[in-house]
Length: 136
Image (cartoon, rainbow, N blue to C red; front, side):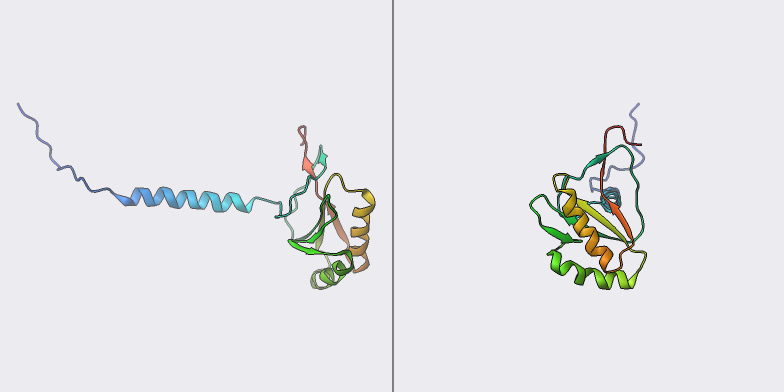
């Protein structure tokens, strides 16, 4: 007895499932990229055992090992940093200022940056660190 198929095999490729997979991948990469905290300037921040995640609006001041200073992603000098910070702090007095200083930068240089920000009204500061191996 010969068995016959009830439905004919359709040789056309169905793109609906392919489109679903591509859209899911797109959503995954968009969501995972939003979890990235670091900005475009690469520095090696000090390691700590404890850490704190900040979700508020923040301004990032980055000080590289070579002495370059960045306000968010824009390179500035110490003399022009105050001019960049004034509008940001006037707009929001509770603005968090995150200092991302390379671990090889002297403490004096980091304190000078914080002092400039305090001089224009900055009140909330954080120092960016990298969670170590035993971090909680």
